[in-house]
Image 1 (cartoon, rainbow, N blue to C red):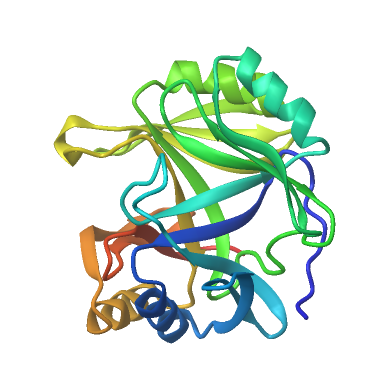
Image 2: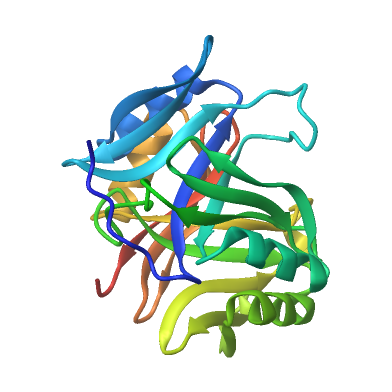
Length: 262
């Protein structure tokens, strides 16, 4: 039912949440961002929740199964668009990535694989057929950025450069950020990267998800009312925007940001 524009190969096209409580997560994110939910049957006793706003897809949600291999804590996952999942999966493996699943077809929506990069972060490769991905970016309640938190930035630069043609641009940021890497596809920023710091505690390598909001502080306050917990302080990045990290009621982390320009 929702509009889904084409996403260029090498760009993030979709995000989905693996949740230990699908009903609670559906209620939380619908209330926080104003998303509407559409339930797509997956089996006799499970559904895939597709979120949308104004007829355009924003994200998805499914019930995680602790009995499944590679299952873990609640987390957001990021998809990258590619022309050929089979070719990209083979290339990822040749570059030192681990193929956790696939390639396989997802009904008539597309073809995908699940990859773990050499530093341990998991992500998805997506070859669209009838589902292109998100229909909105950088608007209130919509995906606006994906960021790799890793223990090995050099290995990650080499891996993603070889896999997706990204080039890495490093920039020194004020503490506690330090060096921040922007990944570019040509001149188009596609994502970011930061080195995991010891003072963060036990943070596993992963691709983090940012959602754009009109009022960062107001969204944080609303999220807390709905049962979320702040992760650190709300911060300003000159020329970029004001952002905050949150942990949803089931423990999945994500960021919200009021962009300075969009």
